[in-house]
Structure formats: structure tokens, C-alpha cells
Image (cartoon, rainbow, N blue to C red):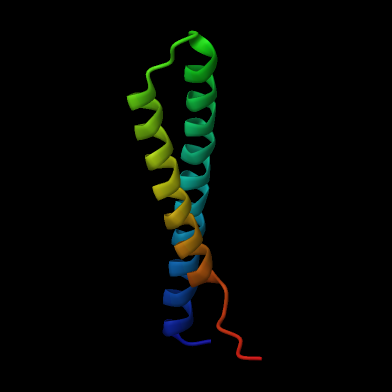
Length: 75
């Protein structure tokens, strides 16, 4: 094992750590959206839209990082 393998492994560890943070933030947004929905009969729809947009953006980042972890397999 040469030094380049350590660099690749460190990168994968960093990606996994970033994924964990993004997933937690995604769950937190999910809870915030649910709380906003149930907080009042007339929820702040602009705030809901912003939270949902941010949640979607996080999901896109999560999927991109997951793709970097999976090796490219050509069937």
C-alpha cells in the first residue's frame, strides 16, 4: 500500500462524514417542515417553500456524494 491509497481513503472518510452531516440536516428540515405544517391552521407557505427547496438541494448533494463513493461499474 503506497501513500496514494491513504489519500483516497481519507477522501472517502471525508465524504462519509459530509454525508452524515447532510443526512442529519435533511432529517432536521423534515421535522421543521412538519412542525410548520402543524403549528397553525394557516402555515407560512413562503417559509415552507424555502425549507422544501433547501431540503431538495440537500438531497441532490447527498446523491452526488453517494455517487462518488460507489465505483463505476460498466455492465
